[in-house]
Length: 203
Image (tube, rainbow, N blue to C red; front, side, top):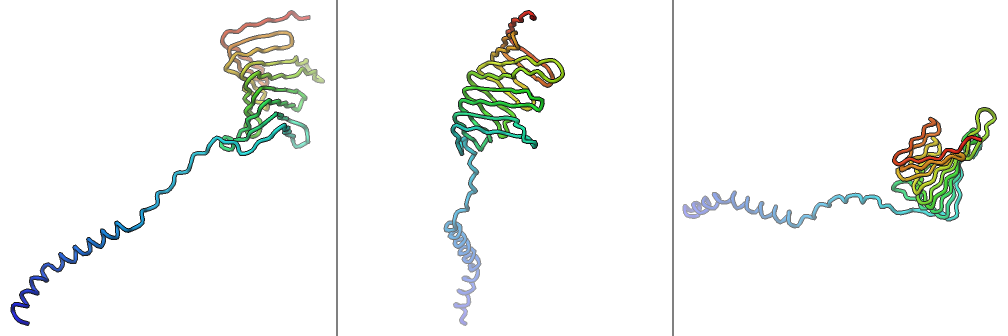
């Protein structure tokens, strides 16, 4: 190989690594630009408050293991919402019976019940009535009625509360209050706000 050709090759070989690095960079850039974009994981949509089934003119009854009726829920229309597992009931009527025979009836323009009916919220012309009972032993239990535009009821634990004005009628006696907490099992009644009462003389 002549000296001129050898010198030219030596000069080219000095820049060969730079040329190779440039080609690799161009190839990498082409791959980046033409590679498919990574898929962004989709965020799960928040559950919407939409009814998944309806019942019209219905009646649902619950029984204990002996076959005794524990509770019954009736209504003109019920909508079930899976996100909260609740029933929204129009023209609601509920009744429950304790093992010793105490019957409680609740009615309202609208009711919201949890899945097992252990908690009820009554809206519009809400009335909860514990019927009078004469037990085989012990004192008679007078009729007890709660009225208001909103009542919160726990039938199994026999509790009623409201953060709105209520009227309580016990036999012939009547009380009104701005809010109330009643626990039948503990025999505790709390009336709050402006409390007024009329107690009839014993016969």
